[in-house]
Every structure is written in C-alpha cells, then in structure tokens.
Image (cartoon, rainbow over all chains, first blue to last red; front, side, top):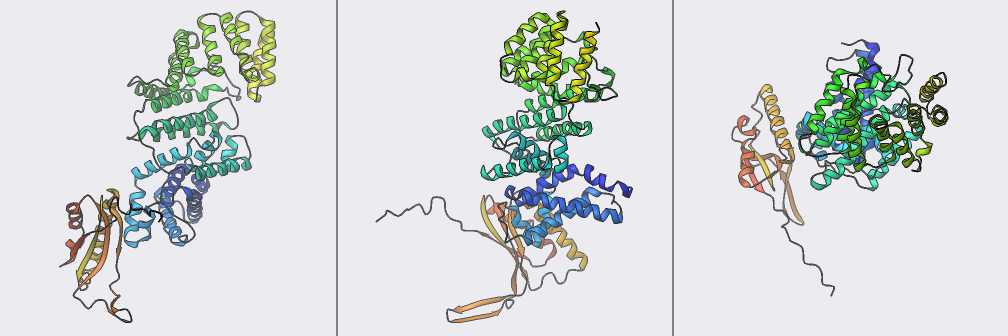
Length: 425
Length: 127
C-alpha cells in the first residue's frame, strides 16, 4: 500500500500513460467517431479509482485495478448507449454477449493489442488533414494523458485555445473520415513521414529555447521519445531507419537538456555548458539508435541532424568539436532542406571552418528571406561573427537588434550578458 | 474465409450433472477457447441459448406454439465463425470444451449460405 496523500499525484502523473493506453483501446472498441466517449470513460475510471483509493488506500496493482474499472465501464456504456450511438467497430458485437464479453476484453486489453491501438491512435492524431497545432494537442490529450490545463501550460496558451484546437482536430477526423488503423503499403511511407514530423514538432516544443515550465518541457521531450519508441517497436513498419534516426536525434539532444541552463535558470550556449552535466546514458542510447539508423543507405533530415548532434556529443570539449565534419553534414542537409533556418545554422560551421567573414557573406544571402530579418537568432549569430571578425561596433548594433526581437526574457538576458562583455573589452 | 454456424446440441440438461467446480472449469475453458478464436480472427459471434422456449408450427391462421424441449436433443448455443473451409470449421468445433465436459454433446457444423460473388448484377434496363 502506498501513502494516501500521494494519491492525486499518482493518478495525475503515473497514470498518464495508462490513460493513454485506455483511450486508445476504448477508441478501438467504440470507434474513432466516438473518441469523446472513450475519453469520458477513461476520465470517469480515473475519478472512480481516485475516490476509491482515497478511502481504501492504493491497491498493490493499481494499474490492473484501473483497467478493470475501465473494462466494466466500457461494457456498461455499450449496453446503455446502444440506441444513442452508432458503433462501426466489429468488436462491440462480441462485448454485448455474456459468453464472449470477457474473452473479448482479455484479448482487446492484451499487451500486443494495446500497443497496436496506441499506434493506430498515433497515425490518427498525426493525420495530415489535421493542422499541426491540433495534432500535437490531440496527441498529448489522447496518447499522453495530459489534461487540457497541462497542455495549455506546455504551450503557454489558454485552456480555451487548447479546447478550440481539440475541437478542430475532432472535426477534421470526422470530415476526413480518418480510419482508426495502421496504414499499409505505399500509404504507410507517406503517413509515417507525417507521424515523424509531428513527433519531432512535439519534441521541439519541449526542447526549443526556454519557454514555460522546465519540468513540463522535459516531459514533452520524453513523450515525443515514447511515441517514437511505440512506432519503432512495430514489426510491420519497415524500413525503420528514419524512426531510428529521429530517436537518435531526440536522445542526443535531450542528453544535454539539463546542462543548457545555469543554477539561476539562465540559458547557456553550447560553449558555456558544463559537459559533465551531459547525461551519459541518454547519449549512449542516442548513439545506439544512430547506429541502427545507418543499417542501409537511407538518408533523411533526421539522419543528418542526429549526426551533427552526435558530433557535439562526442567532442571532449567545445574547442575540439569537429567543425569540418559538421560543415560537410550541413552541406548535405541543405540539399534536402534549403530553409533559411538550416542555412543560418550552417553559417556557424562556416565561421568555424572557413572564416567569420565568409560566414557573414553567407548570412547576407539569406537576409532577404521572409521573416528571417525578424528572427532574433539571425542577428545574434551575425553579432557572433562580427565579434570574431573584430567588428565590435557593428556587433553591438546587431546584439541590440537581437535583444529587441528575442521572444523570451531568458534569451534577452543571455544576449544582454554577451553585450555587456563586449562593451567592457 | 467462409462463414459457418456451429450449433451446440446437448441431450436433455447435459450440464446439470456437473458439480459447481466442474461448471466453473467448463466456463473457464470456454473463455480460453473463445479468446483464442478472437485472437485468430475466427469468431464473429457466439451466444448460449436459454433452454426454455417455444416451437412454432402449423400454417398461417392455424399456428401452434408448443414447448421447445419435447425432443431429446436441444440446441444450447451457437458459434458464428469464420474458417477457410469445412475442414477448418470441423477442427474448430472439435476444440470446443463441450466434448470434454458434457456427455453426448454434439456440434453441428453448417456452412452459411452467403450472397455469391457477382450475384445481383442484373440492373434494370429502364424499360
């Protein structure tokens, strides 16, 4: 028995993943058009578990207990809502019979089926006809068991806004008649790309520059990794190199997560980070996945980004970073993705391998791209190159511009520190 | 896959002689059997039938409905299954726990007559 005062936390946190599993299985049972019903049943089950345990204490196997509650509720709902709802799913029929209900539930709630249902849910949430914003909100809600206020906190937005996104997602599912299934054949490749994109987007929501609560951001990264692991575990999905590459990228990046801020929560650049704080185990898992990703000749953006990340991870210190390898990787990357952001990152490697002046010239080629001039990192990067080139007056101006454009206080602070060091030289 | 109906036949109340413990064992065996059929994608549905019922006979205007259990052998349930052919359906029937627990149990294996491929393709000509 666990302490009673931990109950709300246990239900909230430990059961996030259980609730993700339950929503997936119940959606399979009720059909995707009854997703709201699946979510309600899971919510009711959690409430019932919490109320019961608060009174009686937590049972030895709370997970099995919760699943039992959900199974019973599912049967009740099928009986009660029979006339109100239309169930397309074929398993509902078996759940109506006293003889077959229990064996059917055992089958549906088996490890393998749950895993498959979660994968079905991943493909549904990441369907291209749902907007990216809504995809992530829906995945967090259904698969990751986040509450709406938690999602709102993670995105630094309002509960209303998240509700709107979820509403739009459900609407898209209905309008596009998205099937609750794992695509096969040619369809799979296309849909898998979309799934990986959404997972990477979710990861970056957590990983990209300090916004919002640190714990929640780390959880977003963990969730992205977990979803990718579910995809990677599915035997019928082949080839897996791109999933493996994405996993490598996420593990390698997340291994540096805790080193990116100092004790006062100030952002640190790669150069300033204490490499002792990099997580050795996560790094090793990342490198393992990178090896798995290189089993045949496939090459995705994730492969290159992961390899670049690995180059940072394996360098003993900042000075011994293999910048010429990194530049070669960026040279390949821009053939796959010519976006200004990739070219901006590539310019950092140019400055290291060639010269700051050549990097500055490279920046000039992207200055006129839409929105890049409004992006603080463009000006901050330019300032770095100007400092290296000894152009301190121009560098100050660029830094001031970057500080004006920086979206977050922690970034403004990082840049201001840089500026004050510059002016005291 | 073809559809079959497996009709379970018992002589009289075949399960009345089972002890409560045996009845529980029989139910457990059925759960395992059914779960296995679901897992393999063989089961469309299954229901036990209550022993009481009526038999309707006669002709329109002169119906009779008499008690069901007048005959010695009664149908106590059905399994609606999917199988490759009659041989597989027979194998599935042989796996039914009825045979291990109920003396004289018999299972009737009957292919379901489904609409044939290509049937009903004659469209009205418009005349």
